[in-house]
Length: 96
Image (cartoon, rainbow, N blue to C red; front, side):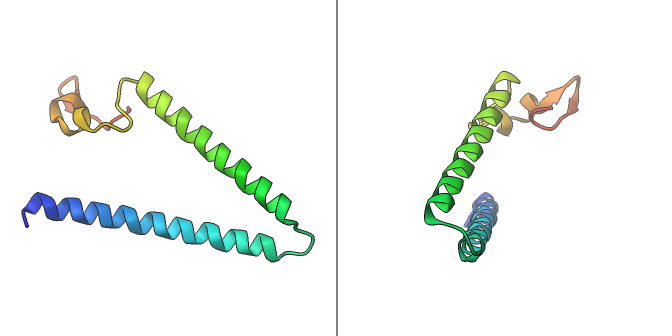
């Protein structure tokens, strides 16, 4: 395995574990809400759909804001180029 492949594998593993952790937290929250008295399936479904829509809207706003700031939100071609991350001769974080 090439050294760069090991780093990529570590990043992908960290991201996968983070997504799994967040997913399990969501399931636990939904189980807690569903087991509380007075909660109907319709209310749980509507609340879940509203939360999903709000998350999608927030993600879309982030993508649009990143695109309008001149930094790619998804494509990594400019972020991988160190010269593209420099402003006035010093390194800056993407999006700043």
